[in-house]
Structure formats: C-alpha cells, structure tokens
Figure: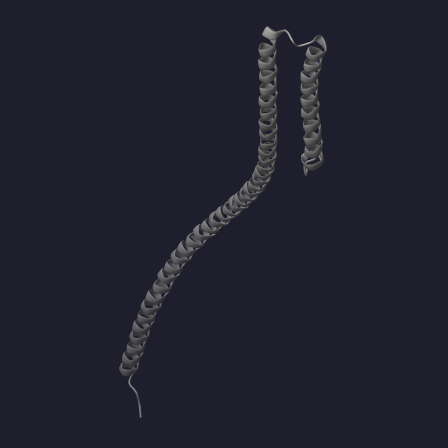
Length: 196
C-alpha cells in the first residue's frame, strides 16, 4: 500500500494542528488552574492574616482579663484584710464595753454604799438633833428654876460632846471599813491596774 505525499502532509498537518490545539487547550486549562490556585492561595493568605489578627486580639484580651483578675484578686485581699481589721476593732470595742460595764457596776455599788452610809449618818444626826433639842428643852425648863448645877451642866455638855465624838468615830469606822472592803473586793481590776 502506497501513501501519497499529500496524504502524509495532510495527516502531518492535522496532527500538528491537533497537537497545537491540544497544547493551547492544555496551557489554557493549566493557566486557569494555576490562576485558581494563585487566587486560592491569596484567599488562604488573607484568611490566615485575619485569623492571625483575631488570635492577636484574643491574646490581648486574655492579657487584659488576666490583669483585671489580678487586680480583682488584690481588691478582694484588701477587702478581706479590712474586714478582719473591722472584726478586730469590734472585738476590742466589745472588750472595752465590758470593762466599762464592770466599772459602772462598781460605781453603782459604791453609790449604793455611800447612799446607805449617808442615810445612816442622817439618822444619827437626827437622833443627835433630838438629843440636843431635849437638852435645850431641859436647859430652858431648868433655867427659870436655876436648880441646875455647874456639875450637871458640865455633865450634859460632856455627854453631848461624847455623843458627837462617838458619832464621828462611828462614821470614820464605817467609812474605813467600807473603803477597805471596796479595795479588797473591787480595788484591783482584771487588767491588773489598781483603782483608787
């Protein structure tokens, strides 16, 4: 079988055209694919930059939250110390109030003691006044009669002086006795201070 030159040339031209078309098509397809890849890489690059910025912002916010948490923790510690300080002050105030109440009780008992002593002294003064009035009445009754002797007058005066001195001695003894009892019972407080 013999092929003609024209047929060979025609087949060769067709093969060349087919190769050229195939090469152009392949280059177009590959170019489009590379373009798509390049645009895909740009999108990935942009998304990576976005996520990088977002991660950086999140890290900054986490650092701010850590700083705020540290500040909040410090504020809570300060508040706890202030609450403890207030509790200590309340305890000290309570102890001071208890000491003050004890001292008020001591003053009340002293006031009661002195009230009783003053009442007894008033009773004795009334009795002494009654004795003086009785002596004055007797002196008036016997003044007109002039029957009272100097000895009786001296006896009456010495009796009145003796009553007054006994009353003074009794008052001093009562005061000394109560003051000694007070000093023994209340004289030394629980804090070791000696109150007078």
